[in-house]
Length: 427
Image (cartoon, rainbow, N blue to C red):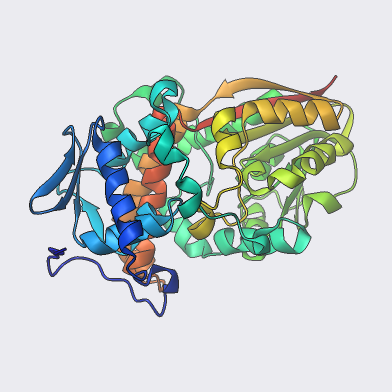
């Protein structure tokens, strides 16, 4: 098998990225991966160029595999991570002129469409256990594990996040309203701050936050929501378990002139005490872990004062897909969010009903808004790469984040993922 590899093809430094070392060749696994590609591509509206004389798919967005043997070896070794790892390693790229997210959309559509959800026929699906990994025990989200998992992402570099997020440093879906459905090619960094403030205000409005309100922000990020609430006259306790994030959040509240109204604490949500009129948590549940979902919602209920309400913004996926993938070890868990698991709306409703006295009602869907947010972040990340690279990150890191942002965008564009705001009230 010949690999046609141009000189400019990316090659990772395996001393820095040991998980990207080329796997040992296994003819059986390689043959299985090649067979899977042929089966997947039979009705896939995309093109996979494996080498100079083998192309699969129905046309549309195209990818070029530079190192066919390595690509197939990675897919044959790990179904959950192999495709993404092959991109990090430089084994494949989108064809020139093809946007990475546009290429990933046809694959995501196969998962989101009920009739074509499974990429492989049933007989092939029965063999997936041979190439599927389980989540490692060291990613458990007890107090120590959660701190380590969260730190690996959110303490990566405050300066890096500052380069591609908008000035509010809000790292969750913005709320564009009707503009969310506009052509993504028109998505502009200039529109992001207003949309993020719109999202923050939508949460505070839903929670009834006003002057004098006592607010708890669980997983506060870099304090954009806490600052916005304090600017309304609220008293805010903002907690995170990412140490570098907490330091910057404290500085930002002081710079915003609300340091006297916001207490930023390095604290696990399980250790918080007190009563609050509003408990808010934006895109933090994805890092909690299935085992701790009842604990998380119980903590919210315990912190609510009589008459108080909670608002949770959560990334969700269809319930059946969550059940099918909850015990697998995915590329995102391995490289981006260790210990993470995306819930479904149904499981949130079940957990709150069975373990708390809370009722969870969806008040807003932001899936299209997240796709637009991610496109803006990715464009900005690429534009700012010279400054980000100067912080000490290499080209493999760049490919990892481009893939993560594009992969996520494709999920929201196809409905495989959604983002919802939930109102939590006592039954």
